[in-house]
Amino acid sequence: RKVVHHRSKLAELLQSCFDAKEVQSISGETYTDVTFHLSQMGPSSIDVEISSLCYGIHDLDEGLPLLHLASMWLLEACQSHQSFEAVNAYLHRFLHVHGNIITRMDQALQKENEESLLSDAPVEEDDPQKLKLKEFIETIVLLREKQKGASNRLQGKMQHTICLLRHLSRMV
Image (cartoon, rainbow, N blue to C red; front, side):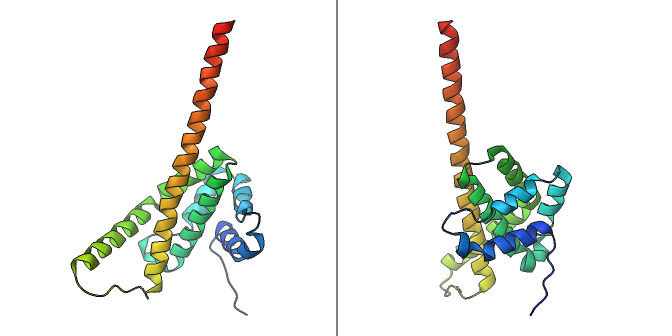
């Protein structure tokens, strides 16, 4: 049996929630333990936990799977419509800390796609690192869409409330 030492409690929770995904897939709440864990922590502790997921481009062998798990957690949290402000704060911090890495990976992937279109060389789909990178970028794109949708929905509800308040204040 292999002994595994995780870099942080967040990394351990992300991995254990992902491993237990088949059991909990019926309810669709795979990563609630992660959200609960972070909700019990202070801002500096949360920052350390999020920062420890990946230390830079040089750490992608171990960091990329953790970044992907974190993006799947954030995606699920956005879709759950619960703890909107906290989830957006976690998302903001995640993107602030790892945004440079995500941008560089996305640019490298786009450049590689452009080069493969220009050349007649066959595209290599067998590289597991490239497949993980593509999955991660796809999850980030989906996360952006879901967060924007949730934000627009909240903005619409706030606008509706403001309109009702104006209407009721005119009645008095």
